[in-house]
Amino acid sequence: MDDDTIVCRCEEVTVGEIRKAIRQGALDVTGVKRRTRAGMGLCQGRTCEKIVTQILVQELRKPIDKLEPATARPPVQPVTFGLLAEKSYD
Amino acid sequence: MTSAVDVIVIGGGIIGSAITYYLSQERVKVSLVERGDVASGTSSACDGNILAIDKMPGYDSQLTLKSQKLLDELVESVDYDLEYAQRGSVLVVEDEKQEPVARDWFTRQKEAGLPMRYLAGREVFEDEPLLARDVIGLVECASDASLNPMALVYGLVEASRSTGAMIRPFTEVTRILQDSTGAVCGVETTRGVMNANQVVLAAGVWTPALAVAVGVTVPIKPRKGHILVAEQSPRPARRKVQEFGYLLTKFGGAEGRRVEAEMDRHGIAMVFEPTEHGNFLIGSSREFVGFDRRCNHHVLELMARRALRFFPTIRDIHIIRSYAGLRPHTPDHLPIVSPVPAVPGLYIAAGHEGDGIGLAPITGKLVSEMIVGEPTSIATEPLKLDRFDK
Ligand SMILES: Cc1cc2nc3c(=O)[nH]c(=O)nc-3n(C[C@H](O)[C@H](O)[C@H](O)COP(=O)(O)OP(=O)(O)OC[C@H]3O[C@@H](n4cnc5c(N)ncnc54)[C@H](O)[C@@H]3O)c2cc1C
Image 1 (cartoon, rainbow over the protein chains, first blue to last red):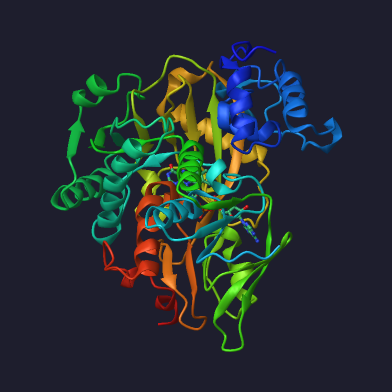
Image 2 (cartoon, each protein chain N blue to C red):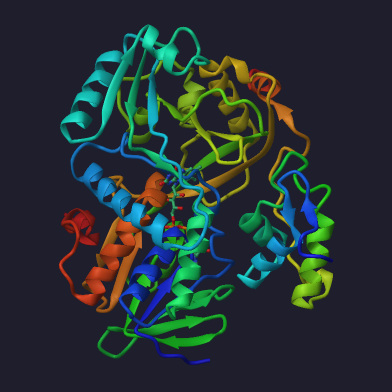
């Protein structure tokens, strides 16, 4: 994959930036996310997480099952402030 | 693995990285040991405000101002985009009951030398037009700033590495080692023993656990806080906005807010922070509920409700993420930055509660000064561990 290819479209993060984050010590999807914002946008990594994982596997030469799974940070589906606030009255 | 350095720093959060940075600037041989990735504890689950407005006028605010000065230098010298922005911040005064307390706070901060303004009536909405129409005042501090706390950790770690510091992530300290005289001689880790005559314990809320094994009691408790992250959207305000009642939830105080008991029970107060990426963060909660870092959904609901009370126009904006972190709380709200007299060579730098990002530069500097034996940048008496024995 070319360094200029965009991996995370929401936050416009490239392959090169992800490789750099791995060189600086990221060992899993969360480490990449915290350093580059890949997966922090509207879709919350639903599109790019697989590609980020693939780059990690390549760069670290590690089997996929040796990587930490990404931390879940709810909500799973985006919810509006209005709807969330309403639930507080239940 | 046995390695000898002069100083071992335990904990790769904002505090440990700042200490490592300032020590390596002094050419001290230092090793930073972190059980996970750097920036994986509280420093990855917080806001990035560098605020003087919410500090007690006096020592507390002087400490913050010193730290802000150091931060200005870091922004220049650290080769990393810290997303630093100095937009100022405001406290929102909700009703007549809060007004005298807020005016008093404003006057004291102004006398302490902060660039303060008090806005009332129409001025409020000329300044922040999307605030709820019934609020009555704003207290502003123009020098307040914000940054990305994880970027600051990465920047400090990379800068330290380039001046020779050893960074050891994914290495957990299992024990602090003492020689026959009781002085520190190193640490035992999941990857072997490391030797050093000086050890700095900067493990945030996890500090007491390591200290107690060498007979030292550290009164730090986890005070949990939640954050909601909104999608990229038009912002309801141009800079940091907090409800004045935030000060009451932080310091406690009978002045009270007109909120349901349930809001108070979870310590919920509206804190709004725009980010450099076009979205915004909404906080916060404050509770003592142990070490669980998972989000409590009910708390998130109450936070959304509180946010709408101040910013009714965000009703249809989406929340894309939420998280919770553990503030290292001490009984008097000041951190512990101190040698441990009973264990020669051991230092503690922890307990920054909700201010660790802002206070990291001065903390790193002070620890470095203590270890190198220079006069400290500010008196350290109020930060001593033994203040709690008195
Ligand atoms: C919701 C929320 C909002 C906040 N907003 C702000 C704000 O706007 N401005 C501000 O200034 N502050 C804010 N704070 C406070 C700030 O986040 C903390 O004060 C700060 O992050 C504490 O840093 P630390 O380095 O002491 O702790 P941590 O970041 O937790 O670092 C301690 C590290 O020690 C490691 N560790 C623990 N035990 C061991 C061991 N045995 N061996 C090796 N490593 C170990 C941990 O893994 C961890 O990485 C907020 C906090 C919260 C929760």
